[in-house]
Image 1: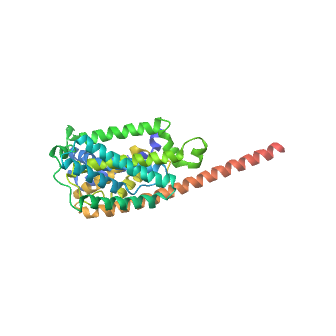
Image 2: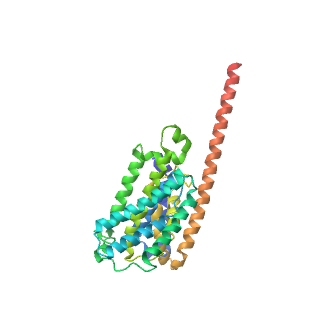
Image 3: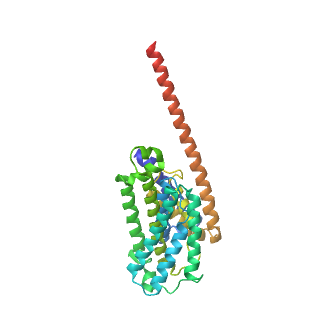
Length: 335
């Protein structure tokens, strides 16, 4: 019970519950099963891209190219489906694109030691430019009707198949990270890269793998995005990187790396995805969405920095107390 109460994911979940209750108090019509389930169903794209971002943050880095990765993958897959290409081939192509982008980012950050913010920002610009070149700036429309219905396909009541599959994937990834040796490498590298290397953990390879996984999840989110929206524009995916970072930090993942879980990132993603719907019930325009996201991100980052400073200070005091106690014990022994 103590372990559960200390879990960062619990704080994120309680924040989500309180947020729903506040909106429900302001507008009682919100607190219905249909609206609550809709918040979760609408969060699928955010959850997928946030889980991928979590891998980059676990290792103490960041990937601001996930939005462009999402958009470019959605563009390519959308064009292939529109032109009658086999679905499996189109999906596999999209996943390979995401993996290639992730591998490129991993090479730049882990092997070339370029700051992750700078390198992935450059990748973001390249991918955005490629989207315009690939489509000529035109929208990708007329996607197959069956493909557009995949996102909203119901499983049980109002719960969709897409959300159910996403939830299962998140649980599986969480178990792999927590209960497998290689899964724990990501947290270890983020917590102490030099120490991880000393105990035999391949830090460079782990960082590359983290970026590849991040790229694959971003690509999958792009495929799901195109199914949900039904079309793709040259600006698709803009802003998703900020929401993914906010979702991860809101879910209890430390920006310095080494702390957090994909469960927390998923809960944070549900919160971020619900903002637009909550604004409607609060009778506020969707123009406040980005403002609220930015304010939440700033607040979370400040709180995370204060918590890290407090933890570092407590650890320093404990080390000092231990050394002082040892010194006193030694003097007493000599006496």
